[in-house]
Length: 87
Image (cartoon, rainbow, N blue to C red; front, side):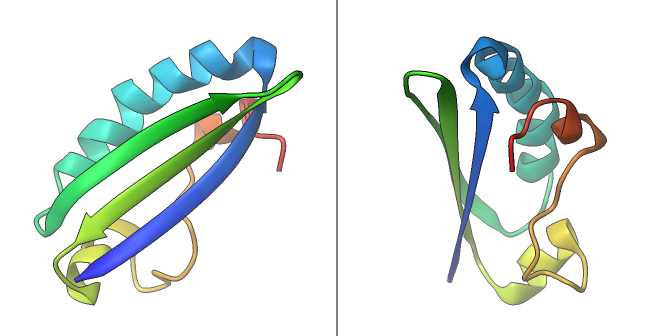
């Protein structure tokens, strides 16, 4: 089994919109992949930014590749991310 972690930060004033976007865009994308066992999407607010942590649990590297592609060591980003993420 494989566990993947992804972290991202948004300005605090964009955090609610980003969280909604991820629930509408990323959650169905992840859950539609055969081999995903579970995912956890968390948020922690700080004074001026929000930190997001996505934990995914997969059956195998092959399952991760079905989601992320052959370059599975790199995070998969959505076009909309550039409007929200700080780094």
